Amino acid sequence: MVTLSVVVPVHAVERYLIQCLDSIRAGLTAAENASVEVIAIDDASPDRSGTMLDSYAATHGDLTVVHLPQNVGLGLARNAGLAEATGDYVWFVDSDDWLPAGSVSAVLSALTERPDVLLVDHLRAHEDGRMEVDASSYLLAGPATTERMLGVQHTAWNRIVSRDFLRRNDLRFGPGWYEDVPFSHPVVLAADRLAALDRVCYHYRIGRAGAITSTRSDRHFEAFEQYDNLHQWMGTREVDPALKIKLFSLMISHLLVVVGNEGRMHPSRRRPFFRRLAELYRRHRPAGYAPPSGSKGLKHRLVAIDSYALYALLRFGYRVSSGTERPPLVPAEVPHSTPRPQPASIL
Image (cartoon, rainbow, N blue to C red; front, side, top):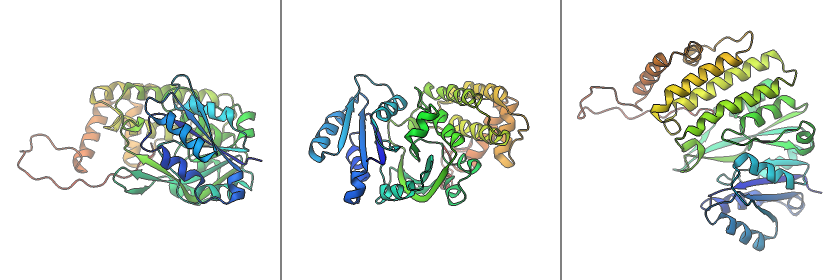
């Protein structure tokens, strides 16, 4: 009997692939190993990743490999792995990330309580070797309420989900970037039994060249359609108004991170993205919503009135004060203070 199916979508990650695969079964007992299956989906990878998967499967004998004839993207590749899965639960692990020792054993132990969804903690692993606690990690130390778990970083890889639960609720990934949005929130909202494992079970690689979060592209605009899909799904369910308000606030904060991120948004595209954000705000603002306090709330208010000029001024002032942007008209020979580290933010 398979308890856990680990689905690993693979595309152009030959540098990181073996570390990822080795980390999944590391330290498992014979009984634990027998209860875990690993399914790798070669999403028409242009590098040696597909060949490496076949070689790994031939050598280890405990890896199922599926080669897709054409590239379909992360979400649909995960669906392809889900279709092959036979375990009671499924864990989507990205192939450029890895699991710290003992993670799968800890997850298997937590799954004996039979939750619909188990959320786990992670560290943000920078390319220079630094490990950083995520801003939302503290939420996993408290009760696993729906309201609390909605605030945890909204990704597929930090939640292990019952396959039967996914089938009953017809939950799958859609195409496009930000495919986690209309999946990660609904699995929390629809769950009757939520559980949280306050243990670091995942290392999320930050700043990798070629990663979506490090790529300037107009495809970041696809986030708007994904949030529309989320609201369309919520329209088919009875969702607590307080949870709708929380999700709305999280959505606006998330998209403000995207528009302000130098690695994702070309300066020339920042204004049209902000305008689309203001349209999304007006389209989905729930009754009873009030902006949060502090600087975050100020940015929410600027979105509400579609004031990109004031937002840009506020952003520039913050970047100057934090040392990440040079003020205008400062002679080049004037030394600048060492940039202060940026706080981790939810992607």
